[in-house]
Structure formats: C-alpha cells, structure tokens
Length: 100
Image (cartoon, rainbow, N blue to C red):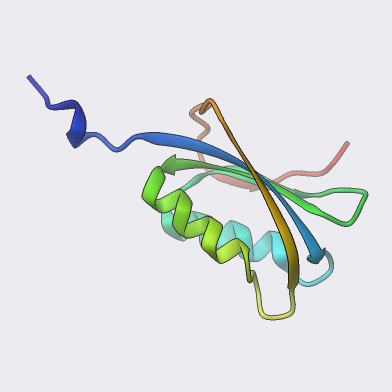
C-alpha cells in the first residue's frame, strides 16, 4: 500500500500579472521557466495589458513559479499579481494562448 504523503499534491494557480508585462517577452519567458520546472498550463496577453497564466503541478514547484512571476524577464516591471487557486484540470504541457 502506497503512502498518500509520498505523492505530491497537485495544485492549480490562476494568475493575473499587471505592470509592464506585454511587449517585453513575458509570455515566452513564462513558457521557458514553467517548462524547465515541469509545470503544465498556459499563458496569454489580455486586452487590458495584463498577462494571465495557469500553472499546474506540485505545490512547491508552483510556488517557485509564482515567485518568478513577481519579477519575470529582465525588461518586465511587475506591479501586481493576483493569484486564485482552483481545482486542477490535469493539463499536459505548457503553451502560449491567444486571447479570444
């Protein structure tokens, strides 16, 4: 019988990042960082100049990604981050989405 504490708890963080985060490579740096960490999810620009992202993975790894989001790539100036925790959808891979 496997101990349930040996399996990492999967969490989903839905994040809204504001500041100078569009036109500075934020989305693509997010894809690179999330992929390196082994997270699943997506990132997109919003019409109001924010960036929206979803990260799914082990809590400790998602928290590491959220810390990265507070600074982002070197050209970004992050002013605020809103994080909402949701039920994981068990996404696969990490991608850039286009707002529709």
